Amino acid sequence: MRVLIVYAHPEPTSFNAAMMREAVAVLSAAGHEVIVSDLHAMGFDPVSDRRNFSTVVDPGRLSQQTEEAHASAHNGYVPELQVEMDKLAWCDLLILQFPLWWLGLPAILKGWIDRVFALGRAYGGGRWFDRGVLANKRAMCSVTVGGPPELYSDSGWYGPVGPILFPIHRGILGFVGFSVIEPFVVHGPSRISQRDRAAYLARYRQRLAAIERAPVLANPRTADYEGFTLRSGMRPLPGATSVF
Image (cartoon, rainbow, N blue to C red; front, side, top):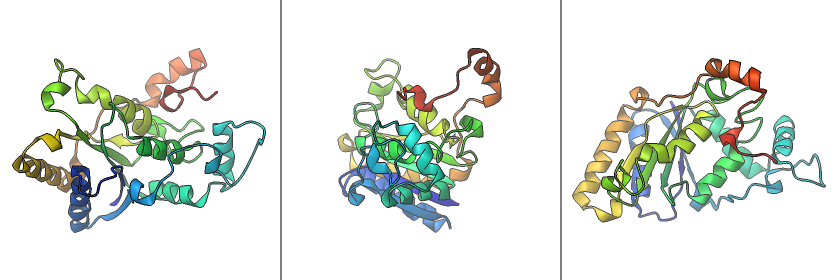
């Protein structure tokens, strides 16, 4: 299996870094090919605009999806972005390793998705969800959160982690076709003992060792929505966001 780990933490001694190293070690020992995109070490630029392209359709007005479609058809992405797109196409499993910041993705990782998950490369032309460009691939979020489990519960301040990660699981990974593995979540690694951190890493090793059998989350089936799509004239948009 070919594995791409996209790692988004600036500190090499962080628990996120420890999890990334564990993943590389366990998966490599199991015979899988592993590539890491260490976004901070790479100095990855998260801003998505004309800097993505070596081609131009309309120099007077930037329509991101129009430029993406043209670049996808004419090999018009700048080299540093094309490399990441090639990694995404290459992998069978994508692991996003990140800390939850403000109940969302760190900016550098969100920018990686904004730039790499481009029209014509990750979705488009009726290819989404179970018919997506990246169907038959799997993805998993490996996440650290700042507080204890009680804060991320039905009675906690933030609510359960599942709904917090839903926009990532459904609106990003599921949308482009990934089968999304249940996330691996570490609660408050900076607030717990070394023994508890070691226990989390042990559980993560177990998850990775059995990654090919890991349970996946429910995702829409295109056929279940075709009637609605035809009646309404609507089609899915990436993350249901505006493109204007």
